[in-house]
Length: 144
Image (cartoon, rainbow, N blue to C red; front, side, top):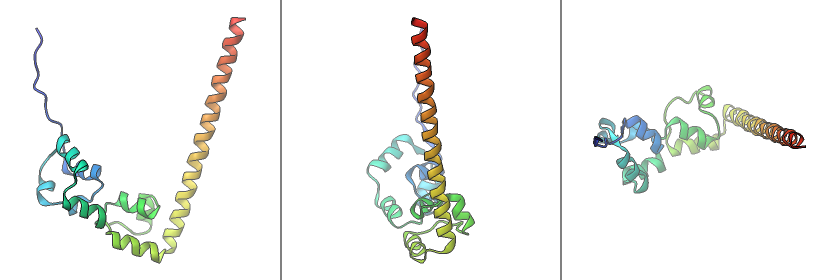
């Protein structure tokens, strides 16, 4: 005999939903912050964002991950630069225009990290290709 289980609705905390939406939780409406969000509600927010969500995405304040991306640095780089709070789009643009020394340095570090990641990825791909070729050659030798 099989039992029919009631399908439960998956929910998440507001902080998780805000992260998935790419917005700063502290700037979201009180009802968003105080409740739980179902997967269906999250999907609805993503596909047809209400005005408050559109405004937050456009003007901020933005979470550190978004600020870091818009400035082209890591979240750690923001901290090293003394940026610990959420910033608005206007504040991010002002930082870009000012282009302080710490921001230039962190962008350089970020670019070096990206280059190194590409180099390591290409090295691993090359090694994997060589392993596959060696395995194919060994298999060919076995067949002879």
